[in-house]
Amino acid sequence: MSDALEILLTNDDGIHSTGIRALYDALSERGNVTVVAPATDQSACGRSMSHEVDVETHELGYALHGTPSDCVVAGLAELGPDPDIVVAGCNKGANLGEYVLGRSGTISAAVEAAFFDVPAIATSMYVPAPGDGASLEAVDLEPADYAEATRITSFLVEHALETDVFEHAAYLNVNVPVADSEGEPAPVEITRPSQRYEMDAERDGERVHLHDRVWESMDPEEIPDPEGTDRRAVAEGRISVSPLTAPHSTNHHETLEDLADRYAESVGVPEHVQ
Image (tube, rainbow, N blue to C red; front, side, top):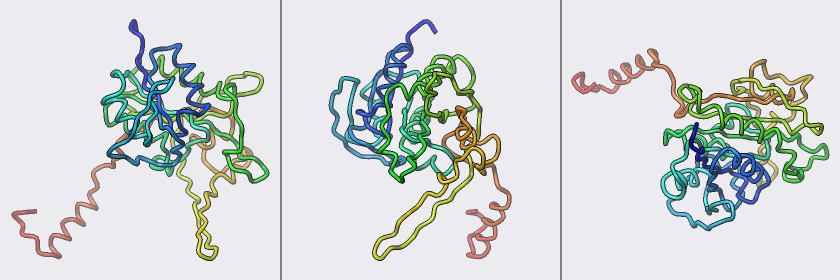
């Protein structure tokens, strides 16, 4: 492309996160980057929307006191130039499997862009949890740790728009391992979201603790996810790229049509209005 790319960059970890700065620096070498990102951490907020949010100028662009979806709407409709592509990330923590698609703020930003018919990439980095039971927030990451994420995202931003990738996919869900300390690039695998779901709950008096057990089995020697899934690829040290669509839809279902007809008969819907 002869003209510089226009890139809208957002995330759900907040505008002050290391991950968004790493992507900003890398993508600025490929085009004009406008950042519209949450002013505070909005992880796992899904596609929550606000009717009105405060906005502040920031050295990277704009900080919105709202969600990632708010940021995409505001960025596309008002604050930024018409972008060629929206990038969300880099998220500290992987977004793997079907069940996170509606839960992740990073993914939701890409989905929001898809409804504007703007191609999007959501990039997340798998960070193994500390062995002492500490939370992911306790893991301290440097910009260099995001080298794998910035490398693959920059490549896709620069080259995917020249192909027909986004004629078949609304957005790409990219998950990467932490960068190799020796700088060895990881291979890429085109994947599908894993279908594993292992949420459970335990009551303790007046509180209920929710547990996501799926992260307890990420050992590449024992991981139960099948070949070709995003979770297995990342656990085994590969970059996962899943082409996804929005909105989610299903094929025409004859059995459901039959149920609709039976309902009409059971409640006496007149034939002329069926």
